[in-house]
Length: 252
Figure (spheres, rainbow, N blue to C red):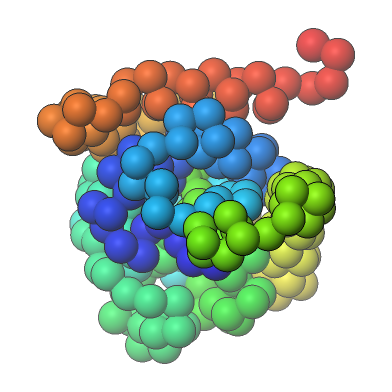
């Protein structure tokens, strides 16, 4: 298991899964990541057998001071990694590349003013202890898609009935893993609530401003994919339509 984002440029089409598309939760992000990987089956993953893909809940902004607008975010040193660095830059912040293990101390010592992350990291990495505010930026919520893969030769060497078991269990774990990410987010939310940290909801108008601000990140992905002869525009459209579809309440 690993993340597509760990090797930038290695997965030029599937990088689109990590864009700031407004993922509402881990269940939806995981479902979409698996569906699109299976639908497009890009050459970039042809050298392995993908069992399923999972993805964490929406990345939010956790900061040492309250952020309610793009103006308050401007120039703020924000920890990120991979694609999230481009998101920080598009929103007007000053991106600082950094791994999760380094982030607690960096926030504590003021090396960075904020971090872009799913809320579960605020408990899992204890980062909630060194921030004071969370801005719910779900409108531009990104994710990190993680693949579970098997060696092609090993897969091909399995009897069909065993392959069937692997496929069935992997499909079951699409829902299970997405739910696990959401439970981790819920635990993170309770953790920061217990610490008395404020959670700021952006106004509808401000949410729209943030969405417009990150649009160049989406455009750059489409342009880069097109240069490589990849269907980035179609992939992005599919992702956006699936987010809208799976975010609707049941029965609508």
